[in-house]
Amino acid sequence: MFSVPHIVILFVVVLVLFGPHKLPELARGLGKLMAEFRKASTDFKMAFEEEMRNVERQARELEWKKSQEAATAAAAAIASEPQSATTSTTAESETPRILPESVEPIEPIVSPVSESVSRESHPESEVSAPVSNESVAATEESSSPEIGKPPAHDQQQPA
Image (cartoon, rainbow, N blue to C red; front, side):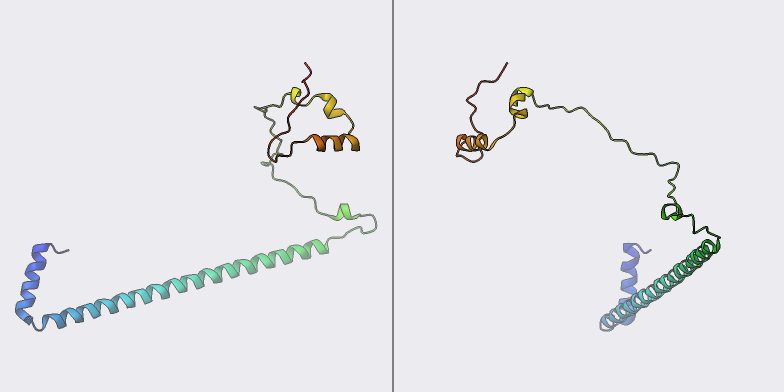
């Protein structure tokens, strides 16, 4: 475009030709012309984009109609096939689902547990012993009244 010295020379020539009183009017007119040009280019761009959307929408509608016609034709072809209704059951009349060959059944992943619970914390006698109403009541009475603290164990752990 223009460099700084070219713009300065151009400004001086315009100032000499039109004078200092006419220069603000010229600048306003140039500004209005630029604003109208931007508005017209924006309107043109919006109209062009709107037409492109309309063309794409019409193409999608045409594809949808073709797919509907194909589905209707397929349904008519299936309905026109002879069926033995006396010997077929509902399980036989359902169409089987066929999975693509690339899909493999998902097997569960078994990974070792990094932290395990020792058996010493819960002896088998406590775990497998039947629970009676009396033992539940005794456990409730001996539990700690403070919430959030575990009850104290007075029993010795078996070796």
